[in-house]
Length: 371
Image (cartoon, rainbow, N blue to C red; front, side, top):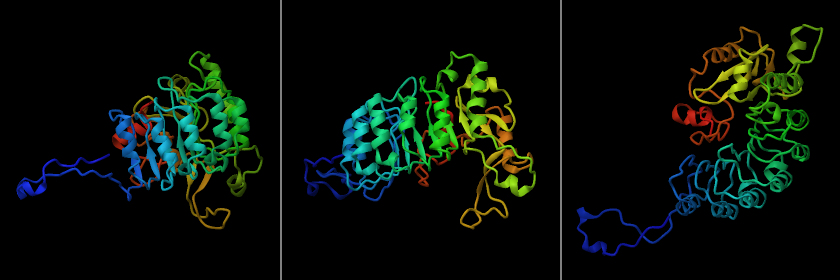
């Protein structure tokens, strides 16, 4: 972004007639840390690139749905002042596989990433090649260090071998794997069980042949329960019923929310056990364990001996959290726009990034709209 030199001297302009004059110098915004440009598709890449690079202190950057070009990612990768914590590049059709690989592997700005969205769908798949996916999973510092808490790889050519080779992700909480037809559910379950047991939310819209629109609907619903819920979310059987034993019981993982296609959610009906279908105001919907979540009650003590919120399963039917989730399920989609999981829009006001929550139109962009 550059300013133009005025042709007329300011001395020739009366005091009251002076307006804003452009000068021949670059403009920088050194104090602004968080920038969201989601769906700003009317701005060309020739303007977008210098504009974004004019923010040398960015920590949060959302470029999803823009005309972001490889030159912008190359400029970010060369920056020594930008240190991103949250980055969203979803639905950017002009990006190349090489430019994304370069910024994630060689860019110092992505070394400390905690939130990364490379979302794509059927209408706008992410331009990744299979070899580049494997290279990123094995060499990108943000992935090899295991510090990611949010990761979306929807529509990428990911295979079971990629998940088997991926380093452990102990801090990952929200994982997007939608629109990957050739990825088996058993491989996903195995990855969550062995390498990412702290994942709470996963998106599986049209992922695997078992959940594809062409698959028999009975087969799809059975696969969700048998492959995912029974293996990953079921408490171990015990004959002891004392409160202390029940309190210490944990399932194999912390999985509690599964985003699925609308036709599968319709087939699941009212759910099974404590699992319920929660729909957004638009196209998205989730299969949610209403008897599970983070609660802070008197006497809850962490491993460090400090009272804090704990992750619990098997909440009683009168528990406020369970009653609230069941009320959302019964509303049939008549919910606030702030209701949902696995946001698609970055929250920049408070700095919560892709794990943040917003209301109104911003909330609809995060949780309601499918794209």
